[in-house]
Image (cartoon, rainbow, N blue to C red; front, side):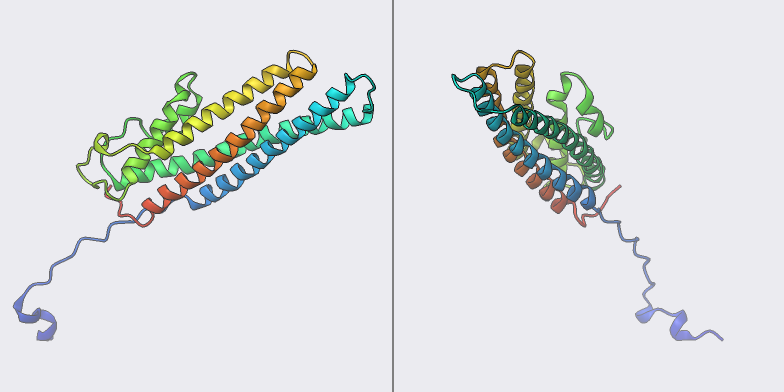
Length: 240
């Protein structure tokens, strides 16, 4: 026989099957940590390049002085060190960029799963936006801006409109610093293709110093915005 206590629910009320618990978002912390480390390392290389540009300027100034004291060995060491730092900086930019794109891809997917408000660009543009000529001057910050808006705790998960969510001043500042920094880098590279005069090396030193300072500010802004987006997305219910 069937146990009546098991066949009849308490108080005669039928048990209700609760819906399964919604999955929760998991930020790409590993990608963020790797990107953060590489961004900081690349920033350190940029500062070293500025220091080396200062030393190279004084060496070249000595060469063109009335009584030069610099040796060929010193010039060779300075040239080799500058070349090494240039390659190290380029490698850092590429590797940190790859790690940042991996983080942004995951953050973009999470933002679409925790908030159903339409975003201006599809997920694939998290990567493609950086490689469109001219368009890469503003498309990447559009992607990150929508991720920021969709991830904010005060943005409704359903039926929201990201156009009504305030834009991020932090992203605007970060993007302006990023674009200006790389513009200064291109200017410095162009200077070195002209000649090897004292004035050229002096201009390169000033350009590298400015680029190094911008790199520090850009890195700090990037680290803050990545951490904030991850914190907002962490453990949020995914509605789709």
